[in-house]
Amino acid sequence: MISQIKFASIPVADQQRALDFYTQKLGFKVVTDQSFGEMRWIELRIGNAQTKVVLFPLQDRPPGGFLNIVFQTDDVQKTYEELKANGVEFTQEPRTESWGTSAMFRDSEGNVILVGTK
Image (cartoon, rainbow, N blue to C red):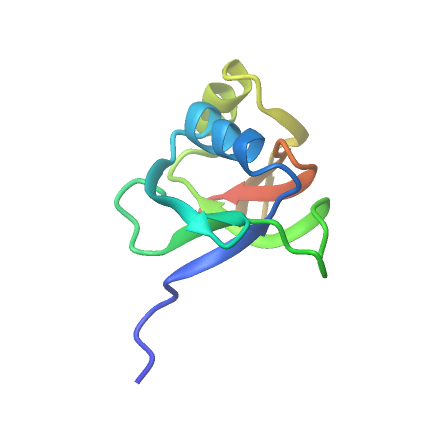
């Protein structure tokens, strides 16, 4: 049986620029960074989560636009303030709806990602 999602790919144009963004601005940790043909296979861990993200140049899906990925936090306002202080560009400030609180930011590749509460 399927037990979990191992990783989700984030489309990038420049793997090194994206690696710098996700490690230096968001605090993700490198699990794997190795050659993968002419590219690199870069897997990152988010805190203690089992699911990882892969920074991968996808020719059939260029970076940019809204990703169907939500990064979860216990405190959206605090996370917003910390990431903004790290130079992360937000496209939507924290907003509370009936389902929870969220904010949206743009990564180094132009992808828009939601950060929200449960």
